[in-house]
Image 1 (cartoon, rainbow, N blue to C red):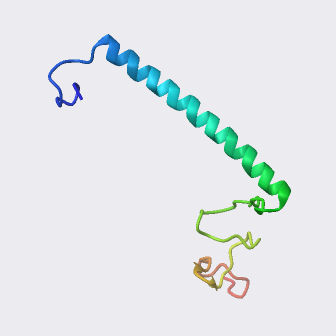
Image 2: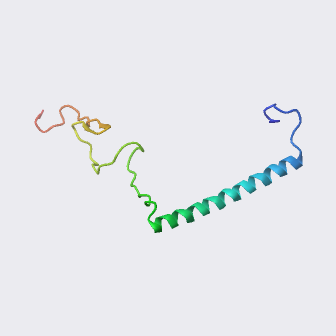
Image 3: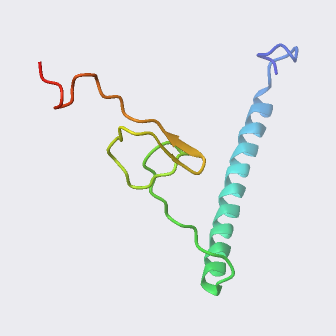
Length: 99
């Protein structure tokens, strides 16, 4: 607040130490809660109450689906909400045109 000119006086040493202690306490609390949550999730997985998360293989953009097709197609393709434009082939690159 002092740097942003929202406060007249700089923070005292006591305030700085109090803020650092508060941050350390919060870090420890977050760590404890996340450990408890992991244990609870493991217990629920064992009891069959919750399905385990699936491990996905990311191949492209986060919103794009991957269907195992690596090479570009000359024809455009569309699947559900995705659209893949066709690959551009320069004119005259085909075997039918010989110069």
